[in-house]
Amino acid sequence: MNTVPRQETSPHAPEEPLRQRMRQFYETSERYKGLLAEHDEAYHKPFVELVNRYAPPHSRVLELGCGNGIASRLLNRSGHHVIGTDISALFLGEAEKWQQTVTHDGEHNLEYRVCDVLELPFQDEMFDVVCSNELIEHVPDAGAALSEMIRVTRKGGRIIICGPNLCSPLMPLIDLLRLIRGKPGRPFWGETKRQAFSNSVRNFHLYLKKRLSSKPQFLYREPELGGQVFGGDGDSAYYANPIDLEKYFRHHGLRIVRRCVGFSAKGKLMSICFPRVSLYISMVVKR
Image (tube, rainbow, N blue to C red):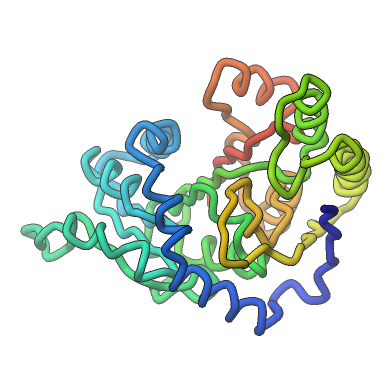
């Protein structure tokens, strides 16, 4: 199965039917909820540690696309005032029991809200830190999502974005090597040797094109929103990559603190040597 990118026609005009279909999928998919349930505290620990590294003590933190709410809960335990948001009330159902009572200054220590990252219901410059983990690849309008992140972050605050680099030419090569050794590749992306090789060549061309462009070039795909969930980011709508994010933030006057951090030993080495083709996005930005 080959995935064909579609070039965005407007940076702030998502395809409304797709946006509605994605919302309905996340609001109703019990299978996807089950997939998120597998993401325990250990799974979220690297992301939470990264946010804590760049968040001042007792920060007002907004987590976007918080899913089952565990990362928001961990950030709250670290002493931050946290609002965790997700587009799906279904996903947040279990997390609501963790909400804390109001503090002495009238603010919630931990709160969960259902909202869309493309239209955040918060005032300008309201948060010290805005963060997301494995969200950006699931938005049908990356430019609008990034714009909203900037809007609600205070001047001097941090934006932290983590997620798979779906334009890395290295991941399809890893799929290809796994397939050659008789192991399975990733669903949707590297199910056959031919597909893995083709995607690696395509991603290398995308990398060169994006590096040479003066502006971000957001590319989108038709997400798999069928009844079964196979994982592997088959439901992603945006070919997430750090080059787009870097160019977008710089164009809007923000400073890139870290292009890529890396979580594992290999990831840290990759973040130093090849941050723009690293398998995982872990970007820190200062407004």
